[in-house]
Image (tube, rainbow, N blue to C red; front, top):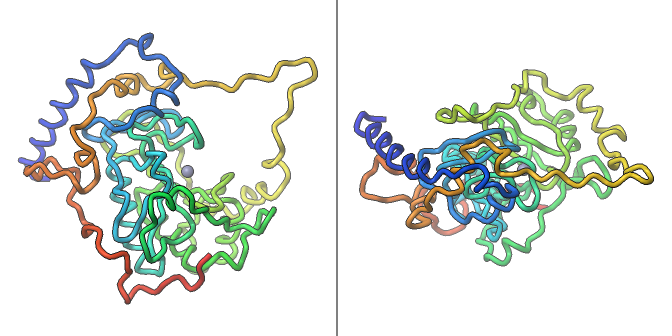
Length: 344
Ligand SMILES: [Zn+2]
């Protein structure tokens, strides 16, 4: 960053911090179930990006949108309005889409990232709250643009055999392994979550460099998509990090546990005569205090201002990052990119 750009960035952050602080409300005023408060916000605030709290208990200021179409990606389920994230995550998804295309992945179908200001969601996901998590389908993008309706309706494809914890060998391909390896290769990616069956598939088939397997963690769900998690980013001192994954490839005892009954046992029913416990509702006041203030921060003048790579004010220093992706053109991959050998 040049000195002039730095100054502009500081000026921008100062001018935008003021309304955020003056818009702060008392906890009592702001208190409401957090998933309703954050789930009803349609746009982010404009600010230098900052994640507050933990992946499953926090929010994000200054999120930007991943454009719904790029040369090598399409955003799915647009009605959910969850294509928002930390600019570094959005930049990484765009980079992954390009890098993966070079090794035979036709393009990313991007699922949920975060809500415009992060926070808990009305449906699905405990995490995805601080703008550093993204779900990517394990189905490659087709050679055409989906309509908005198709983006709602097209079903994701499970990689597992029916009623089984194991991968269907007819569906899994080397291109899927390569996609996960690409995603794990970036230093800012701390973890990938996949179904234990997929982790097992990787453990049993990856040869040569296996160091990246340490980042690939087995978890419930994640059999039709995988989940990318960035570490806390610079400029977010109140982002609470997760413990490091270590160097172990995770193919030993910890993986074996997933193939016992233990993780799949249904929750214990309440004892006779005992009232079932009501589900815990997280309130805005239980999130980091910056999150309550964030709910009241002003909205941008236009969606363009908060879309990654689109902001154009004539002052280059105010853009989040230079757009490195050519504007969306014909949805046909270059001939030199091999198509996946096998499509689900
Ligand atoms: Zn996820």
